Amino acid sequence: MSIDFSVDPEFAEHLAWMRRFVDDEIEPLHLFYDEMTDASWKRATAPLKQQVKDRGLWACHLDPELGGQGYGQVKLALMHEILGRVTRAPEIFGNQAPDSGNGELIAIGATDEQKDRWLWPLLRGDITSSFSLTEPHFSGSDPTMINTRAVRDGDEYVINGHKWFASNAAKADFVLVMAVTNPDNPPHKAASFFVVPRDTPGMRIHRNVFTMHHPYPGHFRSGGHAEIFFEDCRIPADHRIGAEGDGFLLAQKRLSGGRIHHAMRWVGQCQKAFDLMCERAVSRQTKGQLLIEKQMIQELIADSSAEIRALRLMALHSAWVWDTEGGSLARIEIAELKYWGAQVLGNVIDRAIQVHGALGWTTDLPLAEMYVMARQMRIADGADEVHKSFVATKRAKAYTPVEGWPSQHVPTRKAELRERFAEFIDHEMANH
Ligand SMILES: Cc1cc2nc3c(=O)[nH]c(=O)nc-3n(C[C@H](O)[C@H](O)[C@H](O)COP(=O)(O)OP(=O)(O)OC[C@H]3O[C@@H](n4cnc5c(N)ncnc54)[C@H](O)[C@@H]3O)c2cc1C
Image 1 (cartoon, protein in one colour):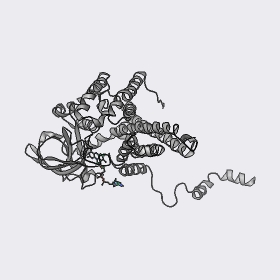
Image 2: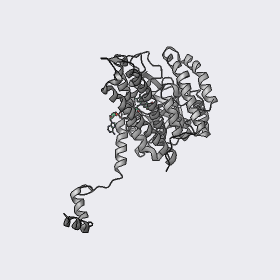
Image 3: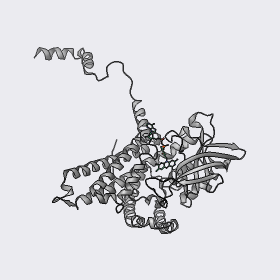
Image 4: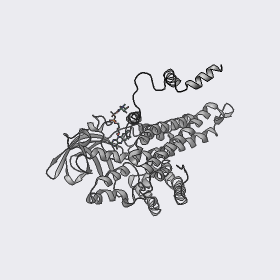
């Protein structure tokens, strides 16, 4: 087995270019994002997207037959670490959520005709999408509980239900909706996915939900999280992606790889917070000393440094397991990465805020928004507890129950071993 953390020179050059491009081109423009309309942001970013395409780095998460580079998860992870420093950088590289995951789902489940209609335009960045599984009145942690129904009626399906937290739905060209089609099937074979195009009669976007990130009207710049009512919403039967009952299978495939990308973007966010924290610690004086000379501040920095490196290694290792053994064998690693990474992200940003004092609490620095975004990560993409439960259950399967004392019970073991070492023990005892 060889462990090699280097990258090939050609790819290293891509990464170096990405670092410069994100820091010098995207990040400065992003500072004006809140002051731009969607149309002006689109115009301003079009030349940047073109540069990314010219360099062959557009939508790299996809396999070559879908127009990607087939880089594998380790290379993608290293790219996402760089993109993570600026919230909207993934968009400039054609791999922003939820479009990237939706593209993967459609690529797996769709027919050629469906790909022509929705996948290729999505990959080109001509249209945008949303993903709608979660419902307000049933636990999103258990998708077998979803209540939205799609009933076949001739050449159509009729959808009825109530969804929420469909990110970007208010602006998306289509919503990928999960609904129960086969209620009599076993729970994991009961639901299917449907493409519901914007403005389809019966799909009513009720509101964007106010959140910690978007607490007040007028703050919905990035699409928001929509509450949607489906009221006798009719769609042609050929808008179903995959076979009836394949919804859970497709949903699972959609989310796994994206979690590694998320985690590496968190590393990028952590590193940004860490840079701010250290810069402040070596700049700010109190009681005749720089903050960096205070041991409690040193602890904040030291803990953050170790946690970031551990998170980075975990993410790269998960990516490596995926690349060498296959995505399905990386599920435990990815689940660990999800809850552990979200926790580290929150820890590091929280410490960076603390080191800045009142300034950390203001929106004069990017830390406040980063902190709110970090908090959502413990819930979005599956609550941490669900991933922890999965990991604990899977790990525990490797162990066999014992009766009586635990297998490492010292008196019992010594009693069992006494016979094996009898000669040695007798000899040693005799010499004492
Ligand atoms: C910012 C953000 C964006 C989102 N975007 C989307 C989107 O685009 N599309 C979409 O469909 N959904 C989206 N979601 C919804 C998200 O997937 C759900 O919130 C998540 O799956 C949890 O479901 P729930 O909110 O119904 O919480 P519930 O399932 O009701 O869980 C509530 C709490 O119960 C606890 N819990 C749940 N299960 C267990 C368990 N097995 N063991 C122990 N404790 C448990 C956890 O503490 C959990 O936080 C988004 C959520 C957020 C916050």
